[in-house]
Length: 468
Image (cartoon, rainbow, N blue to C red):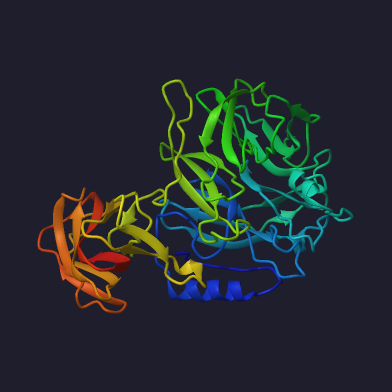
């Protein structure tokens, strides 16, 4: 999916990284689907609108070996930034900062956790936590609560860097998960977590505190809370944050009429993961008059939730300014071009029976998933496909249908919608690309539905519409 991949730091080319790079060079097709970044593990996304693009400042999960950090735990040595002008094509601008470049950070801790990035007066400021030199992580609680972590800032002339870190971390700030909010009057605020949430005014140079930190005390005492992210809408200040109210983190929010509160709890934005991804981490942004909610999940690593992937869904408010609860989707955000390789496994709806999706290759999850149909009448729907005015006359699909009979129906709108074309699956014994002609014109934006009308088992990797 990614257009470019530039690594600027020294360490280790693991077998995982090599596989990812090979996959990148072979497949460069874009998908506006979850996860958004589809060639590496990413987490803790802060989304910012800069110019006419969205930039995602994200942390970077890797698989640690026995000599890196803490095995079977979070292992994070650097940061990447990604951008998109259409929410579909995401460009990797490469590594912007690593633990090996930060003078005050422990360069063997692999603790470059959730960051934030923001622009002010033509400069770009990147805030990040890390274990500081001279501190030791012993046991579970110090790592989680950030008691051996400091927060630093790196500065650049462009959102994609290069970023130059300050020599020392920010004074009077101990903890993790920095977030910066700049109010309408230009005043910047820094928020972070360490057992509690803290907030303080930032000085005009964005590198030090202007006021002493205060404890934001209007939040739950029971259960871990972390990852504060503040935004403003119609004069209301929203504090969003992950909180372990039960078993894993859910995303809650509170509101205030002042950036430093007091805040009033309002509810849950996203419930805890039904598949036991223990963490979540969020940001909220308004892009082209639509609000979006960015978060992460272990979609590419279902058996190990320390390797996560950035996701996004649309966010909506009610008439009182309260946030409507979000159900995570596979479809995600953005239009999908009809002439791209459309992955129907990132669906917006499906039949109750007869449809599922699986990894194409469990040893390399970044190859993505395949759709699997095994019952007559089963279907999957993929919304927001943009045909433009290209008026395609051919459908291509990569399918496998060993021992199956019947055909796949491609329809617009719904399972009973306009029939576009069909593909006979009887001869598709092994993976192969099949084609079918389209007789009537298609233009504009449509939902697409694929229906299996047959018996046996049919697998679909991707479909694409072409004008030949």
